[in-house]
Length: 96
Length: 176
Image (tube, rainbow over all chains, first blue to last red; front, side):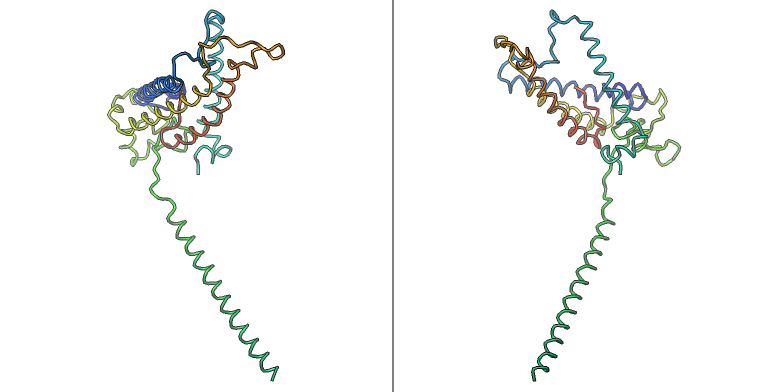
């Protein structure tokens, strides 16, 4: 999400975006397989990642995800990527 | 006679005191010299990849495109500057960059660790019979709620640590 948003904000080049998104997805998928091994079976649910569509309509889930991602990007661009935060969050974000 | 002894003792004390003082002085000066040398040594070869879309503000880790020294790097990594043309953004030369692949692999490993830890903490069995709801707190006292709650709390700590760990290397985008 952050990779794609920085791409649309012209902070990330296209090859970097493709590579990052590919490897993030691959990492997530391998983590899922490892999770299955560590849990011992496939019969587990992670609340929030799996939603029963018979109980919650798809539109509601879309609104929820949209708001959560909007908040994430709003905070990421406001805190992590804004050059004016150098003095406020400087040491925490890797400035000298 | 006793006054003579006292004079001798006072001279000995004076000499030993001055000796201790000079020793102390030598220690301090050598310590200061050491510190000064260490300060000169500190900026070792710690290189961070210039990249505008990284954590920490897009003005700190960038290269000026008007500086001719930066032209070769910017040709290799166009997003080292926040002012890129569309042609440079879509330039496919980046796929041949080893550094980009390294960053992407590290990003993937970070995502793997984060997803695994948080997922494992938050997971609950789906084959077990549904838990009995408590009359006072409803489903808030069941694993369906408590699992993701614990996962969310640990995720707050882990995500911060992962962002700090990957920030200088890849820019910490970290999205599963």
